[in-house]
Image (cartoon, rainbow, N blue to C red; front, top):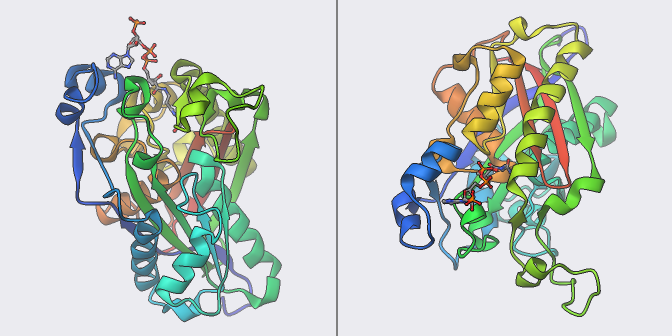
Length: 334
Ligand code: UT7
């Protein structure tokens, strides 16, 4: 960076998942399902559940503190906080403002954004623009994916309740050595297919003509098989797009960190991309689908397990409600 040129990359990572475990065997007692069905069809064995009376932002604040510490910074070094969430405790104040207060990031601006399970890919990409543009001299941006899906899931609907868990992942993004860090991003959306994953807001009224029966329950609803097909397709498409942008091929990739939704989606993408299984990270069996938190939690684990070294090309790729998708290509800088 001595020549004034720099990259924008990851300075620190932090995660938090609640202690309480909800296993497939627990779910067998709640809905008509089995450990065998869930394991075979999804790859999930258990997920973490936040206590009902604890707000989701508390998970985000812990993950944030860990990421700031990992970056060797203090909360007062943070210029902006972006929280990606589809399960905020409040629409206002935003989770980002509440977390700003808890961690004491007094100088930071703060806003929430929602791109469902792709939220973290959108968040990183937005953060990168601020840093590249030199907006207000920003140096360090905290991006957090924070979800308490257990508060939105219908524990009478076996098609969805088996999939989701709670957790938070955070990342501090800032200047790194030139040629390293976030090399490129690709984002996409298809609002025409949005009806396939829904989570209504309180502002939807029962008397609204267009409200669907399941939306009246104000729960997370999903057309699983449609989303499944879409997910395999866009995981391949967005991964190839970021590689093409930088004239790289799948052989140049050291690790793919995909959104953790279903092991069969991950396996489908592995086959289409023709990449070795050991180059694709998965911790789905432990946490289920934690939406916008799944990719930062997975990346943090991959780093802690020693799967990442300086110079590695890493693709993070997400998909989900909206429908949305996104991929970020990083050259690891630490
Ligand atoms: O992060 C957001 C993105 N979300 C996703 O990526 C999720 C994408 N979708 C999926 O992961 C899968 O579609 C599911 C796991 C949700 C469902 O798996 P599937 O292989 O697509 O099953 P299906 O919906 O086609 O259902 C097959 C059968 C049905 O029974 P019939 O009609 O064949 O008699 C379902 O009623 O499995 C039944 N079923 C279950 N059986 C036992 C559905 N859920 C369960 C269950 N336990 N929990």
